[in-house]
Length: 432
Image (cartoon, rainbow, N blue to C red; front, side, top):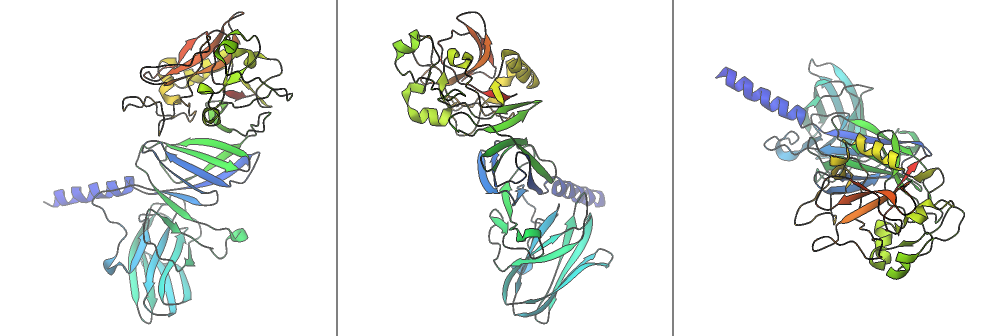
């Protein structure tokens, strides 16, 4: 019986450790050292949220049957617990007066202590900087006394601190957990701990924004960490600013090109008519089914002559990816036979057909189902709907054909072929 009890305790301990919270902070480098905001997309659960760049993302797993944070009568609340980095402490001061908060280690040694004159009501504190171990937090005044065990699984420790945050209670662990000004922090920054549900193995797409710069980082967290966005300028002749993503050693545009101009400012003609499109001998673009909303959301569709024009349609510092660069790209993702699924966006997308989504976007490339135009000027058609897209390379295969890559609605591959110059495909650029 004792062995069974010990085994059960061990299992619960392992579950608690594996189901720990991860805190993700953000930094910038490259063209900007600051992060204005971050959009977080959980591609495994198809959920998303946006937070300020100085805030901290608190990834919270759902663990059935384990309640780590609630004390009797709900008079004290510590979250997360076990902690990795820091936690919030909320308690109810049933009357105003002098209050002492003291954190001791399991041997009774005092680690940190603060004295506060508190008003009646709920108070929230920020506890950080403690090393791995078990601690007892004691909160005492003339009118009340609380205590709670805290387990720390911090890989690194710093200076233990207990800081008063504010008087707003925490009513929902999935909402903002810490908010307000923390006295003593440099520049009086506002620090918030924003929670988002996360299960082990989920893939996160993080888009950091700083001014006009946007950079995507893919993350499958296994620890608390700082994510650094390398901001790179990617601006076309129409002053469109593009998000970028590093995949392997290459840096790609994370969005389809939507310029209507070459670098010298000259226009790329918009050719909606099918016959004109079929017979044109110069660069041209269009929107799918000639709908401007398609161009705004999915980028424009171009013929190869626009890609090959010496006036250059790519943003300065960028170029349309060549056939060989696409090959390096797909090889990095496991080869053309399986890379397609890793390229396609996978949430709220028209790639889905008959309740099946043929993409997971673990690369961060976020290939959109933009569809295409064939050399006759007709629009792409798949069974019952339009569910394909193509990307030009910059590599010609003669006087009438050029190499391209096609993603198909019902397959996980990247199809390689040389369509005719007057086909209409999307364009992605790669950093020089």
